[in-house]
Length: 205
Image 1: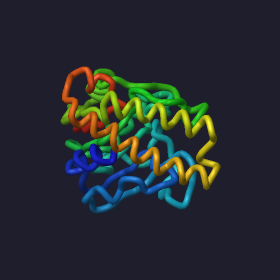
Image 2 (image 1 turned 135 degrees about the horizontal axis):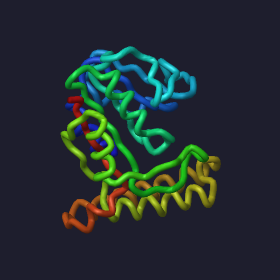
Image 3 (image 1 turned 180 degrees about the horizontal axis):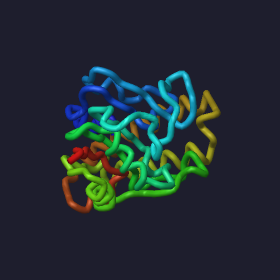
Image 4 (image 1 turned 90 degrees about the vertical axis):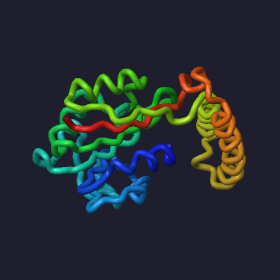
């Protein structure tokens, strides 16, 4: 995902809102922008502004770009959120978003949706955007790797076991790199249909 966001990041510029930034400054360093504001529904040391994606606390046409990574699956009213993004963007403004197509339940109980590329594009097109790009994040082998790794993390609660977490993280890294390599040599349509998710860039009309 980081690779896909970096590739799409050339479209991000000016004054940027990171929608649903979370606890970590995950991707801000990838963008060449003038100002980078991080918003989330909960306060935190990484957060500049507290607010909800379906009621963004900024005036109309305030931002040049919006970044929303792994956010829309957690929004009950993702339609309203898309409208809000359109409202706060300047004409010609950009949103870069990633969404899952497959994946385990997470951030329960606030995990509501999964998206295909077709559904994601339709969502933004009917809310005043044109599509610049929509590319898969990984393929069949990466998807299988993620499902297995996430199952083991949840099964054995590895996030809360520092020793075994460190041991397994090295194994997971090697396995993940190998499976991503298999995706790289399999350019088939079948492989891309079974992606982890999508990384898309839309432009406000």
